[in-house]
Structures are given as C-alpha cells and as structure tokens.
Amino acid sequence: MSETLLQVRGLKKYFPVRGGVFLRQVGNVHAVEDVSFNVDRGKTLGLVGESGCGKSTVGQTILNLHSPTAGNIFYEGRDIATMNRAELKDLRRNVQIIFQDPFESLNARHTVSRILEEPFLIHDLGTSAERRDWARDLLHRVGLQADALDRFPHEFSGGQRQRIGIARAIALKPKLVVCDEAVSALDVSIQSQVINLLMDLQREMNLALIFIAHDLAVVKHVSDDVAVMYLGKIVEQADAQTIYAFPRHPYTKALLSAIPIPDPKRRGERILLSGDVPSPIDPPRGCRFHTRCPHTENKCRTIEPIEELVNKGHRVACHFWKELAGSTANGYSDKTDGHLRP
Image (tube, rainbow, N blue to C red; front, top):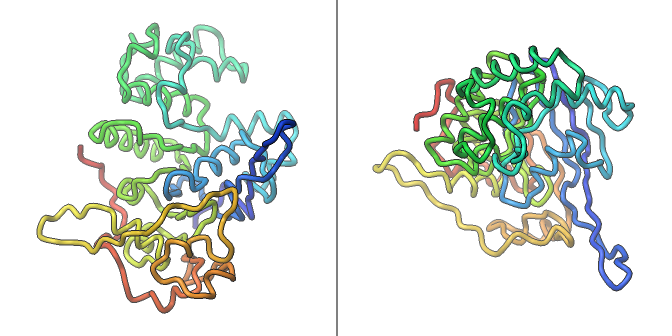
C-alpha cells in the first residue's frame, strides 16, 4: 500500500487587485479555490487544465513560494504553515521545482558548475572539491558531458538547459519534485527525451512528482493519478486509467476529446466549448463551468456542486454526472510503463 507524502486540504490562494489613486484593494483574483488532493511517495499526480486555471499557483504554494490564503498543506504529516525556519529549510531540501522556462530559471551570469553547486552551498554540504564532483555526477545522470560545467546557460539548447534544471532539482535528493510545465517550452522530440529522463530518475530515486501540464496525452503517459482543474477548482480526480477511459465531468470529456487519436481510421468526436473562460476576479455563481457547459441547467447557475464519490478514488464535482455517465469522448485507456517515442 502506498504511503502518502503530501496532503493538500481546502487550499485557497487569492491575489489582491488594487486600483485608484491610492492603490486600494478593490477585489481578489481567486486563483485557487478549495483544492484538495494527496500525493503518494514514488507516485505521479498529473494536474491538468487550461492556461490560467491555477495549476502553477498550486505548485508554487506547495513550495511555500506563495502563502496560502486558507487551507492546509501537510508534508509527511506536518503542516508547512506551522514550520519554523529550520523546518522550512529542510522542506525546501526535500521538495523541489522544475520551472517551465529552462532559460529564465537559470542565472545567465553563472556557470553550470556554480548553478549545480549552489544547493550544496546553501545547505552547507561538502568541500569545494566534493561539490565539484557532485555537480559532475549530476550532469552525467541527466545525460550531459562533464565539460559542460564551465559553460554558461546561453551556450546550450533548450532541452539541454532543461536537463540542467532537472539536475539542480535532484541535487539534494528530494522526495517530491513539482514539474511546472517542465516540457511545454520544448520541441516535441525533445519533450519525449526529457519525460523519459524524469521517469527514469523517478524509478531510481523513488521520487514523487506533481506533473503540471495542459497536454493530456503527456499527462496520461506519466501519471498514476490525475486531477482536472477549471478556474481554480478541481472538477474531477481519479487514477489515470479511470480518467481517460471513464471521464465523468463535461470539462474532462471536452479536454480528452481534443487529444489526437493516433489512428487515421478512427475519428473521435470533438467537443467544442463555447465562450471564454470567465475572469477569476469575478467567478460565476454556482458551477464555475456552467457558462461554457453544453449540459447546463438552472441548478448549475445557482448551486455550486460538491465533489461526489463515483467509485473508489474517483471524485467528480458535477450535478448531472450520473445522467452523463454514458458518454465518453476518447478511446484511451490505461497508462503505459514504456518510454515515449520521439
């Protein structure tokens, strides 16, 4: 049985909106609203949804880069909000992040050696010679040559820079890594290489991953569990096999219908959503998806749906998921354990 490493309960994160001559607060951006999930040791949670739905904010709040407005984040049973300075330093050693942009996330003035040795310096680990050896070993683990140590980030390709970012993230042997759109800025062929690298490192180090992305085909390949977000809320979550084979929320079905089917003889039914995503400053009453949902009823406009248990581990927040249960919008089934092919 899997051991829970991270628990997120009722997480909310609002950002103030200021206006007027005196820049008074005139509202809030409801970036994350009542989000709850678990991440098990050595497993991958895929967090998916359209741009602006709050995925990255969830990841950054878990790392305490943002302070939560409400809710709790428990790492190994400890609430990070109650941690003292020493405990937070230990948390940051065990919980790391890989950023989306592999160029902006690396200091252009620093050599690769300095970038990779910095985590050891911060945590006062090793001698100068040992740190250099550890940095060389990290490069080897991510598929780069040792001569890269004395070069600068601008001398590498995007895929190579992301490998350096991954090396930095695993330097302190963390237990959890947040992959914040870690492959979305890369070419498709390079994406597969980086994903395969992450999966290999996960097996070697027993890493837990939170894989944030909007490409559901990639998320299906790497994830054990999937949570689907819309406008700051999780609308459906289950294991990857269940989400892809038996989606219950209309938004999940629409996302899955957009995945290309790799068979020219098969045609999937594409579900097109009308309208735009509402503003998170003034989210709709009732179900947040009702302004775009093809199955909206009056109840959806006034009453917010609560998460209901479909079956073990499968939860959905929709008033009419039972009535819509018969329709699926994809031909995908379970996760594969092999490697992606470029």
